[in-house]
Image (cartoon, rainbow, N blue to C red; front, side, top):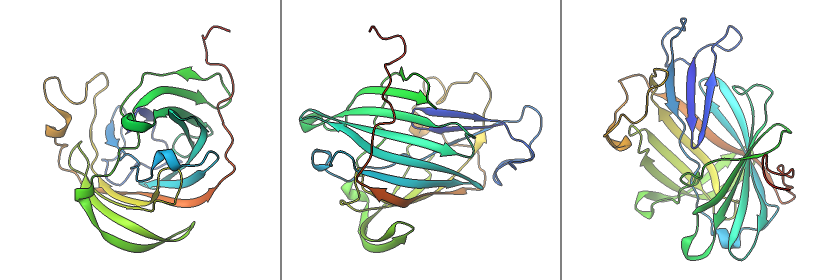
Length: 246
């Protein structure tokens, strides 16, 4: 089994004959588990300027598996903006997972005010607020300006290079401020997988995550690629929150 952490989202995926295990993992055996943490999708745009209805769709490719992630601006006021992120495809099967995150604007830009999760067409649930899934890029990690071609077109981008805080995985990100809503055009990373035991905590108690290094394993390529974009997004989450008073 492979456990994948992507921000606040945790996938538990059973290895099967139709979906071979990632090349960085040891041969699949009963009870064998590994973990990998996906890099977050960075933010480069001015959220106050992002138009409602703007969306960008990404292919997330890792170890032979591809997810599609549509990031869309579905609501906005003077104080906050709501961005939905909808994932479909392998390895989550036929499920559609949508997070709706309401982020503060102004001096406190990017702080999560509210976070909802909806699975398929079920009733959405409020989930604990966590760190922003779209951390703003550090200007100190800027390499330069580059022209990048992806499936959605060719863009003049800013290229950043940095490492993740969980194990020091190297990341290259190319962003363009006019690619609404978050600016990401392409991201490449090489991720390590580490053994995972059910019930364990990560990072271990008393040790900051940045100090915990995964066991040495071959790094596996991971890519976010912009494949489409538009300006006609509609909210996926429209039903009342489960358990909320009516």
